[in-house]
Length: 248
Ligand code: PEP
Image: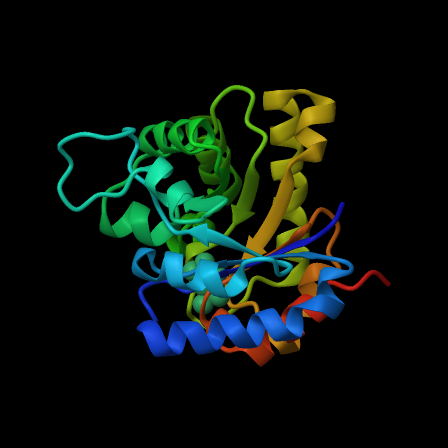
């Protein structure tokens, strides 16, 4: 499966920084785009400007969240079709920071997935256990519930396994732990959506992926790419991670 390397810029980047980062990624993209798909997800305020810089390049544009309704009285929210209109082709949904800071439930994430698909966006759905859940041996149970609750029938988007304890901590999941969880998720996807459809869903790993550990994480079976936070704010680091996805 062709890998996807996606950058989540989170709430970082004013106009000058975002433009410089987008330009540097666009310029370095062609050699890596030969073997992997590249996606950057800037804050909503930068979508149009970054989209203009990336237009015609090998780097796709994504958003970090959307509202579940198509329009209406939702002050401060942004619909999936507005993101599409601003140039996005994908959207991250159910990130643990949204689940924790905004109380997003599996049910809400599923509604957002449906809204994203209806607007023509590729949903990238994040799942992952907390430190406490892993310590108490409940990591697969937790992720299993998130998968069955967050993914609607007929789901054909992307799933990203992001253990909460590995996000922004510099403490990436060890490759054997990633292998065990991705194997479990793949089985669950095939159970939920059928063998063929479940096997075709791209499964990313996210959580402290850096240039120095990307190769070992991206070589794990059933890892079809990475969702990158902190390291996506540096073009050299982001592109180095993408190079680590080269076929071997
Ligand atoms: C993320 O928040 O999606 C993420 C993976 O962050 P980081 O790479 O900084 O751990």
